[in-house]
Image 1: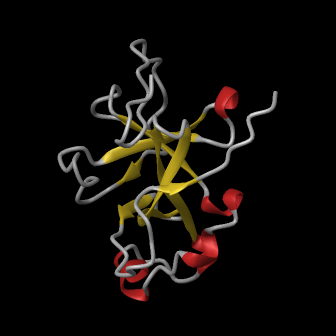
Image 2: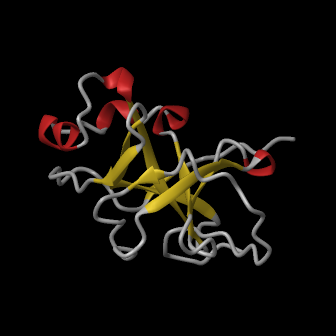
Length: 149
């Protein structure tokens, strides 16, 4: 189930066990979930291209995320060097970039939070949600997702 006007979350009540060796460490958690520091990214084939960012500590806490390149919006997300340095990202090839999705019940469309993307050092498996200081970026940027099966 997806909750309106908040980050989209999975309402799956049966949580299979996953290997947590590849868990991504968020030193400071994610805003709103500061006490949760280990997350897995899981594919959701039935909802592709969306992914699930699920807490290892509390599996019922999960966020729907997506690669902004799929929506051709990655170029407007300029991640400052200081944020990359905090995660020891030396080049963009070492970084994965995601946006958190929400569902807008009025428009019946997904929105992306462009103001606060998630960056991950894919070499060290460390992540952080960054707040971008750009007034042109929207918190509820409307996406058009074609879910043809």
